[in-house]
Length: 174
Ligand SMILES: [Cu+2]
Ligand SMILES: [Zn+2]
Image (cartoon, rainbow, N blue to C red; front, side, top):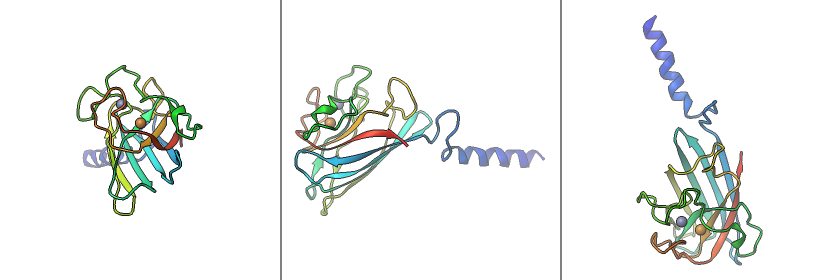
């Protein structure tokens, strides 16, 4: 009998990551990136809550081949401007300096650069610890995801100096 109960507990623990529960486990939000600044860059970015971190999956097309691009969550979920400047600055609820996610000092919205392949497609997956999909001060919902024309140097304040904004999408709870 004891063995049966342990088996059930293990199965419940394994299933937890794929289910939406009271803790917000598995809750999801999606940004559909639209071309900006005259480009044809577009894509999808999915945020999924897993315990105290968020898994990010990005699939972006229409980039120049073999190129590196700054990639951030910006403060305002407004991609209406043709140059996406309506999205404001990097999402920074804790008032930190801009930086790499490998460094403790970075904006909550800072993400690793995207690197495109020979066909101009970039796919990435990573996790973030300073944002949530669940409601709260650090929630990514109703913010914007922005792709930039050049690489983020992870140093220049407060932007990383990655240049213009070539795609933008509002993050919507799904
Ligand atoms: Cu940005
Ligand atoms: Zn930043």
